[in-house]
Image (tube, rainbow, N blue to C red):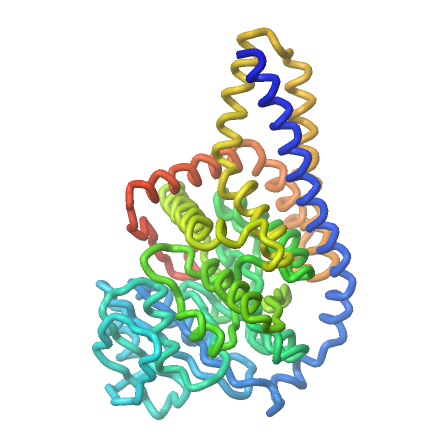
Length: 467
Protein backbone atom coordinates (compact mmCIF):
# COMPACT_ATOMS: atom_id res chain seq x y z
CA UNK A 1 0.00 0.00 0.00
CA UNK A 2 2.82 2.39 0.88
CA UNK A 3 4.53 1.78 -2.47
CA UNK A 4 1.28 2.43 -4.29
CA UNK A 5 0.68 5.67 -2.39
CA UNK A 6 4.24 6.85 -3.06
CA UNK A 7 3.74 6.16 -6.78
CA UNK A 8 0.40 7.93 -6.76
CA UNK A 9 1.83 10.95 -4.98
CA UNK A 10 4.49 11.30 -7.69
CA UNK A 11 1.78 11.07 -10.35
CA UNK A 12 -0.43 13.60 -8.54
CA UNK A 13 2.38 16.13 -8.19
CA UNK A 14 3.30 15.75 -11.85
CA UNK A 15 -0.34 16.07 -12.86
CA UNK A 16 -0.72 19.27 -10.82
CA UNK A 17 2.47 20.77 -12.26
CA UNK A 18 1.49 20.04 -15.88
CA UNK A 19 -2.06 21.34 -15.60
CA UNK A 20 -0.86 24.48 -13.80
CA UNK A 21 1.76 25.07 -16.48
CA UNK A 22 -0.86 24.77 -19.24
CA UNK A 23 -3.22 27.10 -17.35
CA UNK A 24 -0.52 29.74 -17.12
CA UNK A 25 0.54 29.22 -20.75
CA UNK A 26 -3.00 29.88 -21.97
CA UNK A 27 -3.41 32.73 -19.51
CA UNK A 28 -0.14 34.25 -20.75
CA UNK A 29 -1.42 34.11 -24.32
CA UNK A 30 -4.61 35.84 -23.18
CA UNK A 31 -2.63 38.61 -21.48
CA UNK A 32 -0.39 38.93 -24.54
CA UNK A 33 -3.44 39.47 -26.74
CA UNK A 34 -5.11 41.81 -24.24
CA UNK A 35 -3.24 44.88 -25.46
CA UNK A 36 -4.07 44.23 -29.11
CA UNK A 37 -7.70 43.67 -28.12
CA UNK A 38 -7.75 46.93 -26.22
CA UNK A 39 -6.40 48.86 -29.22
CA UNK A 40 -8.80 47.09 -31.57
CA UNK A 41 -11.82 47.86 -29.40
CA UNK A 42 -10.78 51.50 -29.02
CA UNK A 43 -10.02 52.19 -32.67
CA UNK A 44 -12.24 49.80 -34.61
CA UNK A 45 -14.91 51.25 -36.89
CA UNK A 46 -17.90 49.37 -35.58
CA UNK A 47 -20.37 52.20 -36.24
CA UNK A 48 -19.12 52.56 -39.80
CA UNK A 49 -19.32 48.81 -40.36
CA UNK A 50 -22.88 48.62 -39.00
CA UNK A 51 -24.09 50.70 -41.93
CA UNK A 52 -21.78 49.21 -44.51
CA UNK A 53 -22.85 47.05 -47.41
CA UNK A 54 -19.61 45.10 -47.20
CA UNK A 55 -20.38 43.13 -44.05
CA UNK A 56 -21.67 39.61 -44.78
CA UNK A 57 -25.34 38.77 -44.37
CA UNK A 58 -26.11 36.42 -41.47
CA UNK A 59 -28.93 34.03 -40.60
CA UNK A 60 -29.61 34.05 -36.84
CA UNK A 61 -30.89 30.68 -35.61
CA UNK A 62 -32.80 30.64 -32.32
CA UNK A 63 -33.84 27.18 -31.05
CA UNK A 64 -36.69 27.47 -28.57
CA UNK A 65 -38.23 24.89 -26.26
CA UNK A 66 -40.67 26.14 -23.60
CA UNK A 67 -39.35 29.70 -23.82
CA UNK A 68 -42.61 31.63 -23.34
CA UNK A 69 -41.06 33.87 -20.65
CA UNK A 70 -38.01 35.01 -22.64
CA UNK A 71 -38.69 34.55 -26.34
CA UNK A 72 -40.32 37.95 -27.04
CA UNK A 73 -37.51 39.92 -25.37
CA UNK A 74 -35.01 37.76 -27.22
CA UNK A 75 -36.60 38.38 -30.63
CA UNK A 76 -36.98 42.10 -29.96
CA UNK A 77 -33.31 42.22 -29.09
CA UNK A 78 -32.37 40.50 -32.33
CA UNK A 79 -34.65 42.61 -34.50
CA UNK A 80 -33.05 45.79 -33.13
CA UNK A 81 -29.43 44.91 -33.94
CA UNK A 82 -27.28 47.50 -35.68
CA UNK A 83 -26.55 45.35 -38.72
CA UNK A 84 -27.37 45.96 -42.38
CA UNK A 85 -28.55 42.54 -43.60
CA UNK A 86 -29.65 39.57 -41.53
CA UNK A 87 -32.63 37.33 -40.78
CA UNK A 88 -33.95 35.85 -37.56
CA UNK A 89 -35.19 32.26 -37.66
CA UNK A 90 -36.87 31.06 -34.47
CA UNK A 91 -37.33 27.29 -34.29
CA UNK A 92 -40.06 26.09 -31.93
CA UNK A 93 -38.97 22.57 -30.99
CA UNK A 94 -42.35 21.15 -30.03
CA UNK A 95 -42.75 23.37 -26.98
CA UNK A 96 -45.37 22.32 -24.45
CA UNK A 97 -45.98 25.84 -23.19
CA UNK A 98 -47.32 28.93 -25.01
CA UNK A 99 -44.19 29.68 -27.06
CA UNK A 100 -46.05 29.05 -30.34
CA UNK A 101 -49.09 31.14 -29.43
CA UNK A 102 -47.08 34.03 -28.02
CA UNK A 103 -44.83 34.24 -31.07
CA UNK A 104 -47.58 34.01 -33.66
CA UNK A 105 -49.82 36.50 -31.84
CA UNK A 106 -47.13 39.01 -30.89
CA UNK A 107 -45.76 39.28 -34.45
CA UNK A 108 -49.02 38.36 -36.26
CA UNK A 109 -47.34 35.53 -38.10
CA UNK A 110 -49.13 33.56 -40.78
CA UNK A 111 -48.25 30.23 -42.30
CA UNK A 112 -46.28 30.25 -45.57
CA UNK A 113 -44.91 27.55 -47.84
CA UNK A 114 -41.24 28.33 -48.40
CA UNK A 115 -38.71 26.13 -50.16
CA UNK A 116 -36.79 24.19 -47.54
CA UNK A 117 -33.34 22.87 -48.33
CA UNK A 118 -33.42 19.34 -46.99
CA UNK A 119 -29.67 18.75 -46.97
CA UNK A 120 -29.83 17.88 -43.27
CA UNK A 121 -32.52 15.49 -42.06
CA UNK A 122 -34.64 16.77 -39.17
CA UNK A 123 -37.82 15.96 -37.28
CA UNK A 124 -41.06 16.76 -39.10
CA UNK A 125 -41.79 20.43 -39.77
CA UNK A 126 -45.35 21.39 -38.81
CA UNK A 127 -45.22 24.77 -40.48
CA UNK A 128 -43.23 27.89 -41.29
CA UNK A 129 -44.67 31.31 -40.35
CA UNK A 130 -43.93 34.83 -41.52
CA UNK A 131 -45.32 38.38 -41.56
CA UNK A 132 -44.29 40.86 -44.31
CA UNK A 133 -44.35 43.61 -41.66
CA UNK A 134 -41.31 41.82 -40.17
CA UNK A 135 -39.59 40.79 -43.40
CA UNK A 136 -36.51 39.34 -41.71
CA UNK A 137 -38.33 37.21 -39.13
CA UNK A 138 -39.26 33.57 -39.72
CA UNK A 139 -40.79 31.10 -37.30
CA UNK A 140 -40.49 27.33 -37.72
CA UNK A 141 -42.83 25.05 -35.79
CA UNK A 142 -41.61 21.46 -35.65
CA UNK A 143 -41.87 18.20 -33.79
CA UNK A 144 -39.57 17.89 -30.80
CA UNK A 145 -36.12 16.68 -31.78
CA UNK A 146 -33.72 18.50 -29.49
CA UNK A 147 -31.58 21.60 -29.79
CA UNK A 148 -29.26 20.19 -32.46
CA UNK A 149 -32.23 19.12 -34.57
CA UNK A 150 -33.72 22.61 -34.28
CA UNK A 151 -30.48 24.21 -35.45
CA UNK A 152 -30.39 21.85 -38.43
CA UNK A 153 -33.97 22.82 -39.31
CA UNK A 154 -32.96 26.47 -39.17
CA UNK A 155 -30.01 25.78 -41.47
CA UNK A 156 -32.34 24.18 -44.01
CA UNK A 157 -34.47 27.33 -44.15
CA UNK A 158 -31.64 29.88 -43.91
CA UNK A 159 -30.91 32.11 -46.91
CA UNK A 160 -27.38 33.35 -46.13
CA UNK A 161 -23.88 31.86 -46.17
CA UNK A 162 -23.19 32.66 -42.53
CA UNK A 163 -25.28 31.27 -39.70
CA UNK A 164 -25.30 32.37 -36.08
CA UNK A 165 -26.59 30.27 -33.20
CA UNK A 166 -28.25 32.12 -30.32
CA UNK A 167 -30.03 30.73 -27.25
CA UNK A 168 -33.59 31.86 -26.67
CA UNK A 169 -32.77 32.91 -23.11
CA UNK A 170 -30.04 35.27 -24.33
CA UNK A 171 -29.82 38.87 -25.49
CA UNK A 172 -27.30 40.31 -27.93
CA UNK A 173 -25.90 43.78 -27.55
CA UNK A 174 -26.88 45.97 -30.50
CA UNK A 175 -23.39 45.97 -32.02
CA UNK A 176 -22.50 42.36 -31.10
CA UNK A 177 -23.11 40.97 -34.58
CA UNK A 178 -21.09 43.78 -36.17
CA UNK A 179 -18.17 43.14 -33.83
CA UNK A 180 -18.15 39.41 -34.51
CA UNK A 181 -18.46 40.06 -38.26
CA UNK A 182 -15.41 42.33 -38.04
CA UNK A 183 -13.34 39.40 -36.76
CA UNK A 184 -14.70 37.20 -39.54
CA UNK A 185 -13.87 39.82 -42.18
CA UNK A 186 -10.22 39.88 -41.11
CA UNK A 187 -9.84 36.55 -42.90
CA UNK A 188 -13.19 35.49 -44.38
CA UNK A 189 -11.89 32.58 -46.43
CA UNK A 190 -10.20 30.79 -43.53
CA UNK A 191 -12.47 31.73 -40.61
CA UNK A 192 -14.91 28.83 -40.24
CA UNK A 193 -16.28 29.91 -36.85
CA UNK A 194 -16.18 32.85 -34.46
CA UNK A 195 -17.38 32.65 -30.87
CA UNK A 196 -18.84 35.55 -28.93
CA UNK A 197 -18.46 36.42 -25.26
CA UNK A 198 -21.19 35.28 -22.85
CA UNK A 199 -22.01 37.37 -19.78
CA UNK A 200 -24.52 36.91 -16.97
CA UNK A 201 -27.69 39.04 -17.24
CA UNK A 202 -29.03 38.23 -13.76
CA UNK A 203 -29.78 41.43 -11.77
CA UNK A 204 -29.30 43.62 -14.87
CA UNK A 205 -32.10 45.90 -16.10
CA UNK A 206 -33.57 44.89 -19.46
CA UNK A 207 -35.85 47.12 -21.51
CA UNK A 208 -37.19 46.22 -24.94
CA UNK A 209 -34.70 43.39 -25.29
CA UNK A 210 -31.72 45.64 -24.48
CA UNK A 211 -29.54 45.47 -21.35
CA UNK A 212 -29.77 49.03 -20.04
CA UNK A 213 -28.11 48.84 -16.64
CA UNK A 214 -25.33 46.34 -15.97
CA UNK A 215 -25.13 45.07 -12.40
CA UNK A 216 -23.16 42.31 -10.74
CA UNK A 217 -25.56 39.47 -9.78
CA UNK A 218 -27.09 39.81 -6.33
CA UNK A 219 -27.66 36.12 -5.67
CA UNK A 220 -24.90 33.70 -4.69
CA UNK A 221 -24.94 31.14 -7.51
CA UNK A 222 -25.23 33.63 -10.41
CA UNK A 223 -22.42 35.67 -8.79
CA UNK A 224 -20.15 32.63 -8.65
CA UNK A 225 -20.98 31.78 -12.24
CA UNK A 226 -20.20 35.34 -13.25
CA UNK A 227 -16.57 35.15 -12.12
CA UNK A 228 -16.39 31.60 -13.47
CA UNK A 229 -17.46 32.83 -16.93
CA UNK A 230 -14.95 35.69 -16.81
CA UNK A 231 -12.14 33.25 -16.11
CA UNK A 232 -13.26 30.80 -18.81
CA UNK A 233 -13.88 33.34 -21.57
CA UNK A 234 -11.29 36.03 -20.89
CA UNK A 235 -8.58 33.97 -19.21
CA UNK A 236 -9.07 30.88 -21.37
CA UNK A 237 -10.72 31.29 -24.75
CA UNK A 238 -8.67 34.32 -25.78
CA UNK A 239 -5.53 32.23 -25.27
CA UNK A 240 -6.81 29.08 -26.97
CA UNK A 241 -8.01 31.14 -29.92
CA UNK A 242 -4.54 32.67 -30.30
CA UNK A 243 -3.08 29.23 -31.14
CA UNK A 244 -6.14 28.03 -33.09
CA UNK A 245 -6.90 25.49 -30.41
CA UNK A 246 -10.40 26.56 -29.39
CA UNK A 247 -12.54 23.49 -28.73
CA UNK A 248 -15.90 25.17 -28.19
CA UNK A 249 -17.93 28.06 -29.54
CA UNK A 250 -20.67 28.65 -27.02
CA UNK A 251 -24.13 27.71 -28.25
CA UNK A 252 -25.37 30.97 -26.73
CA UNK A 253 -23.67 33.01 -29.49
CA UNK A 254 -21.43 31.99 -32.36
CA UNK A 255 -21.09 32.51 -36.12
CA UNK A 256 -20.23 29.75 -38.62
CA UNK A 257 -19.68 29.24 -42.33
CA UNK A 258 -22.84 27.38 -43.32
CA UNK A 259 -21.25 25.29 -46.06
CA UNK A 260 -18.66 23.93 -43.62
CA UNK A 261 -21.35 23.04 -41.08
CA UNK A 262 -23.32 21.23 -43.78
CA UNK A 263 -20.16 19.49 -44.99
CA UNK A 264 -19.68 17.85 -41.57
CA UNK A 265 -23.31 16.74 -41.41
CA UNK A 266 -24.73 19.56 -39.33
CA UNK A 267 -25.24 19.46 -35.58
CA UNK A 268 -25.19 16.15 -33.77
CA UNK A 269 -28.35 15.20 -31.95
CA UNK A 270 -28.98 12.66 -29.23
CA UNK A 271 -26.85 14.20 -26.49
CA UNK A 272 -26.01 17.66 -25.18
CA UNK A 273 -22.67 19.18 -26.11
CA UNK A 274 -23.62 19.96 -29.70
CA UNK A 275 -21.72 23.26 -29.51
CA UNK A 276 -18.47 21.47 -28.69
CA UNK A 277 -19.16 18.68 -31.16
CA UNK A 278 -19.62 20.96 -34.16
CA UNK A 279 -16.31 22.72 -33.47
CA UNK A 280 -14.44 19.43 -33.09
CA UNK A 281 -15.89 18.23 -36.40
CA UNK A 282 -14.89 21.48 -38.12
CA UNK A 283 -11.31 21.10 -36.88
CA UNK A 284 -11.19 17.51 -38.09
CA UNK A 285 -12.77 18.26 -41.48
CA UNK A 286 -10.36 21.08 -42.25
CA UNK A 287 -7.25 19.28 -41.00
CA UNK A 288 -8.03 16.02 -42.81
CA UNK A 289 -8.73 17.84 -46.06
CA UNK A 290 -5.80 20.28 -45.79
CA UNK A 291 -8.16 23.28 -45.71
CA UNK A 292 -6.60 26.43 -44.20
CA UNK A 293 -8.85 27.51 -41.35
CA UNK A 294 -9.18 29.20 -37.99
CA UNK A 295 -11.70 29.13 -35.16
CA UNK A 296 -11.66 32.60 -33.59
CA UNK A 297 -13.02 34.27 -30.47
CA UNK A 298 -14.38 37.81 -30.25
CA UNK A 299 -14.48 38.91 -26.59
CA UNK A 300 -16.13 42.28 -27.28
CA UNK A 301 -19.12 40.71 -29.07
CA UNK A 302 -21.35 40.26 -26.01
CA UNK A 303 -24.30 37.98 -25.45
CA UNK A 304 -26.15 38.24 -22.14
CA UNK A 305 -27.61 35.01 -20.79
CA UNK A 306 -29.60 33.89 -17.77
CA UNK A 307 -27.57 31.89 -15.26
CA UNK A 308 -29.26 29.24 -13.12
CA UNK A 309 -30.03 30.70 -9.70
CA UNK A 310 -30.89 27.52 -7.81
CA UNK A 311 -28.83 24.49 -6.88
CA UNK A 312 -31.23 22.10 -8.60
CA UNK A 313 -31.14 23.89 -11.96
CA UNK A 314 -27.39 24.55 -11.88
CA UNK A 315 -26.58 20.95 -10.99
CA UNK A 316 -28.79 19.76 -13.85
CA UNK A 317 -26.99 22.05 -16.28
CA UNK A 318 -23.51 21.00 -15.16
CA UNK A 319 -24.35 17.28 -15.23
CA UNK A 320 -25.63 17.81 -18.78
CA UNK A 321 -22.37 19.53 -19.72
CA UNK A 322 -20.45 16.62 -18.18
CA UNK A 323 -22.38 14.10 -20.29
CA UNK A 324 -21.77 16.12 -23.42
CA UNK A 325 -18.05 16.48 -22.79
CA UNK A 326 -17.60 12.76 -22.13
CA UNK A 327 -19.52 11.72 -25.24
CA UNK A 328 -17.54 14.14 -27.41
CA UNK A 329 -14.23 12.82 -26.09
CA UNK A 330 -15.29 9.20 -26.63
CA UNK A 331 -16.74 9.78 -30.10
CA UNK A 332 -14.26 12.32 -31.45
CA UNK A 333 -11.46 13.17 -29.06
CA UNK A 334 -9.73 9.82 -28.55
CA UNK A 335 -9.39 9.34 -32.33
CA UNK A 336 -7.63 12.67 -32.82
CA UNK A 337 -5.66 13.15 -29.63
CA UNK A 338 -1.85 12.82 -29.67
CA UNK A 339 -1.79 12.56 -33.48
CA UNK A 340 0.53 15.05 -35.26
CA UNK A 341 -1.75 15.30 -38.32
CA UNK A 342 -4.20 17.23 -36.13
CA UNK A 343 -1.54 19.78 -35.14
CA UNK A 344 -2.20 21.99 -32.11
CA UNK A 345 -5.73 20.69 -31.75
CA UNK A 346 -4.63 17.05 -31.61
CA UNK A 347 -1.39 17.54 -29.69
CA UNK A 348 -2.50 20.09 -27.08
CA UNK A 349 -6.21 20.92 -27.04
CA UNK A 350 -7.63 17.40 -26.99
CA UNK A 351 -5.02 15.88 -24.63
CA UNK A 352 -5.62 18.78 -22.27
CA UNK A 353 -9.38 18.29 -22.44
CA UNK A 354 -9.21 14.52 -21.97
CA UNK A 355 -6.63 14.51 -19.16
CA UNK A 356 -7.54 17.68 -17.29
CA UNK A 357 -11.25 18.17 -17.98
CA UNK A 358 -12.87 14.81 -18.72
CA UNK A 359 -10.76 12.74 -16.30
CA UNK A 360 -10.50 15.51 -13.72
CA UNK A 361 -13.22 14.17 -11.37
CA UNK A 362 -11.51 10.80 -11.08
CA UNK A 363 -8.11 12.36 -10.39
CA UNK A 364 -9.54 14.68 -7.74
CA UNK A 365 -11.59 12.00 -5.99
CA UNK A 366 -8.76 9.48 -6.03
CA UNK A 367 -6.48 12.23 -4.74
CA UNK A 368 -8.80 12.80 -1.80
CA UNK A 369 -8.79 9.08 -1.04
CA UNK A 370 -4.99 9.05 -1.28
CA UNK A 371 -4.75 11.91 1.23
CA UNK A 372 -6.90 9.90 3.62
CA UNK A 373 -4.56 6.94 3.08
CA UNK A 374 -1.45 9.08 3.69
CA UNK A 375 -2.97 10.32 6.94
CA UNK A 376 -4.00 6.88 8.21
CA UNK A 377 -0.55 5.45 7.44
CA UNK A 378 1.22 8.48 8.97
CA UNK A 379 2.91 9.21 5.61
CA UNK A 380 2.27 12.94 5.79
CA UNK A 381 1.40 15.70 8.19
CA UNK A 382 -1.10 18.53 8.22
CA UNK A 383 1.59 21.15 7.56
CA UNK A 384 2.55 19.51 4.23
CA UNK A 385 -1.09 19.15 3.22
CA UNK A 386 -1.82 22.77 4.13
CA UNK A 387 1.15 24.05 2.11
CA UNK A 388 0.11 22.00 -0.93
CA UNK A 389 -3.49 23.25 -0.65
CA UNK A 390 -2.37 26.87 -0.29
CA UNK A 391 -0.06 26.67 -3.32
CA UNK A 392 -2.88 25.17 -5.39
CA UNK A 393 -5.31 27.83 -4.18
CA UNK A 394 -2.86 30.65 -4.86
CA UNK A 395 -2.25 29.50 -8.45
CA UNK A 396 -5.98 29.20 -9.18
CA UNK A 397 -6.79 32.50 -7.49
CA UNK A 398 -4.03 34.23 -9.46
CA UNK A 399 -5.61 33.05 -12.71
CA UNK A 400 -8.98 34.41 -11.61
CA UNK A 401 -7.36 37.75 -10.76
CA UNK A 402 -5.79 37.75 -14.21
CA UNK A 403 -9.22 37.39 -15.81
CA UNK A 404 -10.45 40.33 -13.71
CA UNK A 405 -7.43 42.32 -14.88
CA UNK A 406 -8.38 41.71 -18.51
CA UNK A 407 -11.98 42.61 -17.74
CA UNK A 408 -11.18 45.86 -15.98
CA UNK A 409 -8.42 47.13 -18.28
CA UNK A 410 -10.03 46.11 -21.59
CA UNK A 411 -13.81 45.98 -21.19
CA UNK A 412 -14.83 47.42 -17.80
CA UNK A 413 -18.48 46.40 -18.06
CA UNK A 414 -18.99 46.71 -14.29
CA UNK A 415 -18.41 50.42 -13.58
CA UNK A 416 -18.65 50.66 -9.80
CA UNK A 417 -15.99 49.96 -7.19
CA UNK A 418 -18.57 47.86 -5.36
CA UNK A 419 -18.91 45.53 -8.33
CA UNK A 420 -15.13 45.14 -8.54
CA UNK A 421 -14.94 44.32 -4.84
CA UNK A 422 -17.67 41.72 -5.27
CA UNK A 423 -15.84 40.12 -8.19
CA UNK A 424 -12.69 39.88 -6.06
CA UNK A 425 -14.65 38.44 -3.14
CA UNK A 426 -16.46 35.80 -5.21
CA UNK A 427 -13.23 34.93 -7.03
CA UNK A 428 -12.01 33.88 -3.57
CA UNK A 429 -15.23 32.15 -2.50
CA UNK A 430 -15.52 30.00 -5.64
CA UNK A 431 -12.59 27.88 -4.42
CA UNK A 432 -14.25 27.20 -1.08
CA UNK A 433 -16.80 24.59 -2.13
CA UNK A 434 -18.14 25.73 -5.50
CA UNK A 435 -15.36 24.17 -7.60
CA UNK A 436 -15.46 20.99 -5.49
CA UNK A 437 -19.21 20.64 -6.02
CA UNK A 438 -18.57 21.16 -9.74
CA UNK A 439 -16.33 18.09 -9.74
CA UNK A 440 -19.17 16.08 -8.19
CA UNK A 441 -21.67 17.35 -10.79
CA UNK A 442 -19.34 16.35 -13.61
CA UNK A 443 -18.93 12.87 -12.15
CA UNK A 444 -22.71 12.52 -11.85
CA UNK A 445 -22.96 13.57 -15.50
CA UNK A 446 -20.61 10.73 -16.42
CA UNK A 447 -22.74 8.28 -14.45
CA UNK A 448 -25.83 9.53 -16.29
CA UNK A 449 -23.99 8.94 -19.58
CA UNK A 450 -23.19 5.33 -18.75
CA UNK A 451 -26.80 4.86 -17.63
CA UNK A 452 -27.94 6.17 -21.05
CA UNK A 453 -29.79 8.98 -19.32
CA UNK A 454 -30.35 11.37 -22.23
CA UNK A 455 -32.79 13.74 -20.56
CA UNK A 456 -32.16 17.48 -20.83
CA UNK A 457 -32.68 17.90 -17.11
CA UNK A 458 -34.33 20.65 -15.11
CA UNK A 459 -34.35 24.14 -16.60
CA UNK A 460 -36.73 26.88 -15.46
CA UNK A 461 -36.85 30.26 -17.22
CA UNK A 462 -37.75 33.56 -15.62
CA UNK A 463 -38.55 36.97 -17.00
CA UNK A 464 -35.31 38.84 -17.70
CA UNK A 465 -36.02 41.56 -15.13
CA UNK A 466 -36.77 38.98 -12.48
CA UNK A 467 -33.62 36.89 -13.00
